[in-house]
Image (cartoon, rainbow, N blue to C red):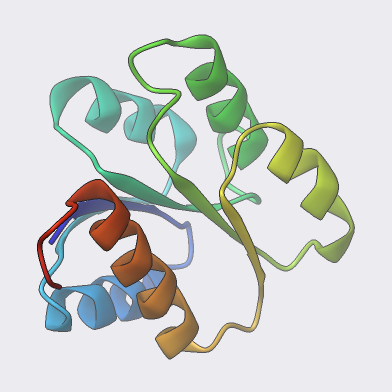
Length: 126
């Protein structure tokens, strides 16, 4: 299983994502803003990020830009979850591996994380 950082400003969604991923055996940490997410990335081993784009301090795209420019962070897979349907191409160009539009189906998020967990841990079963 993997350690997932959920960056989502809506506390209800943050809780739902964390609960679903925890039920599937993943370790979850979360934050409502971009700057604390950067601190988490520097202080903790994160395998996958679930990222909302509309955050109160800085847009989620800024986190993607920072990660793309940092050799230590650019390989961490990022799943963007957004209500902004028109930004998909830009987000994928910044390095996100997946773009899911809101409202999401929780099983779709879990399936993407489980697939990434298999890719990150070859030979292990989720």
